[in-house]
Amino acid sequence: MTPTHGSSTPAPTSPPGGDGRGFFHKHLLGIEGLNPLEIGYLLEIADTYVEQNRRANKKKSLLKGMTLINLFFETSTRTRTSFELAGKRLGCDVINMQTDASSIKKGETLLDTAITLNAMHPDILVVRHSESGAVKLLSEKVDGCVINAGDGRHEHPTQALLDALTIRRRKGRIEGLTVAICGDILHSRVARSNIHLLTTMGARVRVVAPPTLLPAAVERLGVEVFHDMRRGLENCDIVMMLRLQQERMRGSYLPSVREFFHFYGLDHAKLSAAKPDALIMHPGPMNRGVEIDTVVADDIHRSAIQEQVEMGVAVRMACLDVLTRKVRETELKNGGAS
Ligand code: CP
Image (cartoon, protein in one colour):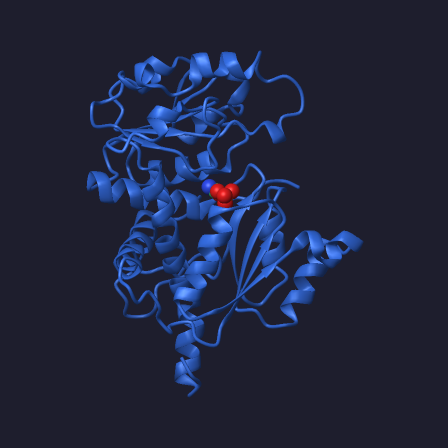
C-alpha cells in the first residue's frame, strides 16, 4: 500500500461569511496539507479541554447520542485509551473493537470490516493500522468521519497535535523554536507528522539519527540532518526522542542496542548540548536504556512526557468536537437532538 498524503478530505472551504478560521475537513488523516490556521484552531479548542479535564466534573453532553468506534489493528495504550476517554467525556457512546477477537481473524478484509461497521452508523471511526494508506482507504468506504490513529510509517496526526499543544503551553509559541527529533526516524509516523506540523508552524526542525534510520531524501521535508547527537542537540529548545521500533526492522539497522544507546541514547551528558531549559519529549512507549536514560526521562524539571499524555486527551476531544460539528449543526437545524 502506498502512503497517501494530505489530510484527506476535499479541500476545506470556509463557510460563507466566515473569517476562514475553523476546521472544515471531514476526516483527520494526516497533518500534511493542513495550514497554520487550521492547526492553530485545533490547538485553541484543545486548550479549553485541558481546563475541562482538570475539573472534578469532566463530562459534557456535546456528542450525546453519537457513536465512536475504536478500531485498532495494532497495539496501543495512550491513543486508544485517550480516544475512549475523550469520547466519553464528550458524552459519546464508545465501542472498542477487539480486532484479534473479530471476524478479521476469519479472513474478513479491512474494507469488508469497514463496510460492515458502516452499516451500524457510527459517527466516528478511530483507526490504527500497520499499513501506510490503510486508514485513508477505509475513510473512502464509510459515511462517518475517520481519524487516523497511526498508519504504518505514514502519519499519526493526533500525536503531533498533542506534542504541539505541549510545546505551545510550555514555551508559549512554536514559531522560531529549534526542535531536534532523534532516533528511529525511518519507521516513525510520529516523526513524519511532527515534521509536517512543526515546519508548517514555523519551527526549525532537525533530525538526528544514524544514516540507516533515516528515510531517503528526508531533507526534502524541510529538516536539517545530523548524525551526531551533540551537534544535533546544540542550542535546541526541544529534544524529542523516538522509540527504536525493532518490531518493524527487517535486517540489520544497528550494530547493537547497546551501541545505539552509546551514540544516540539521550542522557544528561548529551542533553547538556541543548539549551539549559530545553524540554525533553517522547511519544511513548519508551524503551528506557535504549533511546533514553531513565534519569532523563523522569527529570521532573525537564521532561514533559507525562504532560504529553495529559494533552493527548484534550487534543482528541478537540478533534472529536470539530469533526462532528457540521453533523451536529445539521441535526440541530433539522430539529433533532444536538
Ligand atoms: N504514542 C502512542 O501512539 O502511544 P500508543 O502506541 O500507546 O498509543
